Length: 81
Figure 1: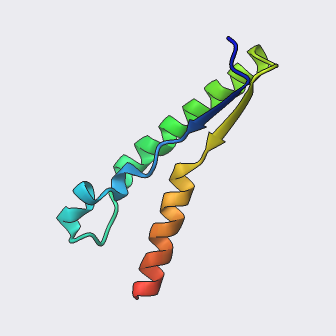
Figure 2 (figure 1 turned 180 degrees about the vertical axis):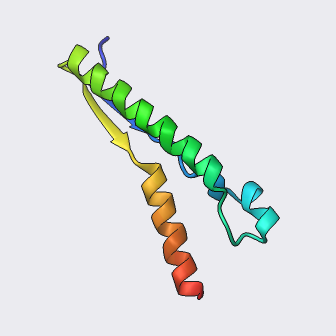
């Protein structure tokens, strides 16, 4: 393929996006949408592992936006309370 390093970002918690949380006055994330994002990320991680085995000379790195965003949101909620 000619590319030796590839970064792949995981999906953020879509249930915590402002367009979704506005219904709850920005207080609560939508658990169903977050579950969809988690399932998507799990499937993506499995696909990346398969690619790592097939393309041994290419480095694949996943960027965990889900955990990063959720950690930030939870931290902000704790500081607000």
